[in-house]
Image (cartoon, rainbow, N blue to C red; front, side, top):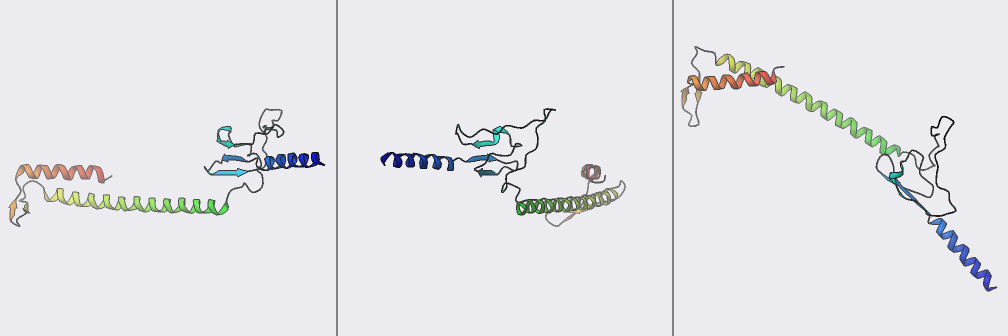
Length: 164
């Protein structure tokens, strides 16, 4: 009778070890996957984080055809892509694209506005015309030739960069 209990205890210990045999790997989206089944064949060996170390369980081997190309094996049930996660990812990418397009449009509008202002400033700074400006004290003064040349260079730089 005693050896039956010992045999039963040994079998229970073996079954609990088999139940604890877990696989752990990183899928192509960078998420950790836990399973009691081996990962799909397309998961690289370096992404397998944990595997059961039992001599009775064979390690997965890629099946090959006569042309030495791996055959596709279906993924175990429950390990497919999360549709809601994929939808959220697609929505986030679409929102990012819309935001990027709006940013580009806004920047194009700012460049066009800067271009128009620079062209008007260049026309006002033409030679032979007196150009007045108001200083920090609120007094009106006239621009000398050096200041006019500096402002013309600045307007030309803006025109070169924003009027394309």
